[in-house]
Amino acid sequence: MENIVIIGNGIAGVTAARHIRKLSDKRIIIISAETDHFFSRTALMYVYMGHMKFDHIKPYEDWFWQKNNIELVRGYVNQVDVENKKLILDGSRTFHYDKLILATGSKPNKFGWPGQDLHGVQGLVSKQDLDLLEVNAPNKDVCKRAVVVGGGLIGIELCEMLRSRDIPVTFLVRENSFWNGVLPEGESQMLNEHIREHHIDLRLDTNLVEIVPNENGKVKAVTTDKGDTIECDMVGLTAGVTPNIDFLKDSGIELGRGIKVNRFLETNIKDVYAIGDCAEQHEAIGNRRPIEAVWYTGRMMGETVAQTICGNRIQYSPGHWFNSAKFLDIEYQTYGWVFGRKGRPDYEQHFHWRHDEEKLCITVAFHKETHQFLGINTFGIRMRHPVFDRWLTEERDVDFVMEHLIDANFDPEFYKNHEKEILSKYNSAFGKSIKPKKKSIKRIFQIS
Image (cartoon, rainbow, N blue to C red; front, side, top):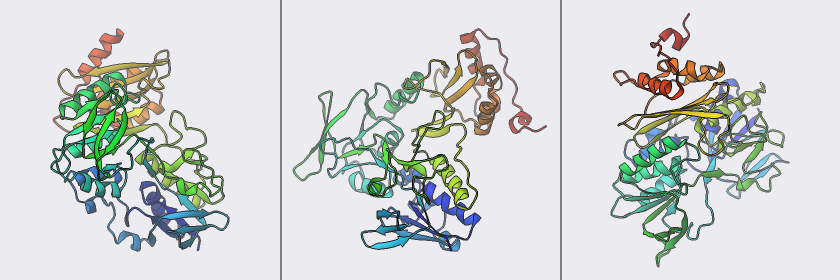
């Protein structure tokens, strides 16, 4: 029986295991040093906030793995011996493989800040980080102030978690507006306002200089490049993540920032594959980054590599870019490409609408010459992924999208629709006289 070993029990590794099992009776072993069972990493914050218990964020019951003949091993892989197809765990145990899938995820970035390894300093990636947060910041009496460093998705999540326990938070963001390397100016500015409305001390254009210890080697304060000293009991480092690949440096597997793979997710070593956050494409796919630390791409890579391992060798083809997130109370969705100030091509033009009172806005990107629809960001308005995916595939022009925008709306019943006022501003901005279509179930679901 062929022996398939998967290192990592996150969404990529577990998806690969599930799909290999659907397609074959191969022996499957998942090795993880983090937890006994797979859990939903994106839901960790809700455990700390008291909305769920840890058992609630495990998608599968504990008996699922034995029932499906998937072996789980708790341990840390120290070495990969590709010549002998052998793994060494915890410096002693040995496992042999016929095919190896590396799905080791990522770890928080550290940039050599003085004091970055002190007690009270942590990231927010793993179950261990969640457990450590209960030690470092269980309440506002033990943690009288926290400082969060890094203005991305994990940073804003950590701020929200801490504020849920009434812990004062200072949020250091090196950019002059929150996440403006990704978001256009209007959206970024709205989020600046929203963060401050939630009583988070947002400090833009500010860099961490040093984390200062007390006499016991625990965090006492941080200093910034503005000359400020901020007293605190906990520091969250959320300045991005990097692939978790240190144990592979002498393995012979080709590494860059991540594990180098081709479009089939194959490494330079026969029978060794890499998927998820740790995988780095030799050449980026379209506008995508070579490394994508995104939940759904990890799932898609797992499905793809399972097909290849089971005899149906197929390329990883992620399709049109999409993503979603939540910034405190505001839901965010993006379909296609809408660039912020960083990397925006010369041909990309934007239309931006923001509600006068509520924290609602959209930004539509289109080609300034051909008017082809390129992408949309929405904040506070839910949209249908299949509709935008179809419009992007059909290369619709921006006028068509604005005319049929109501078809994409997926807000709950009785929510107020804003498509008419959005279209009115679009007409005014570009000298158009487009009239909105009425919502059509036939168009939405392509019923003839």
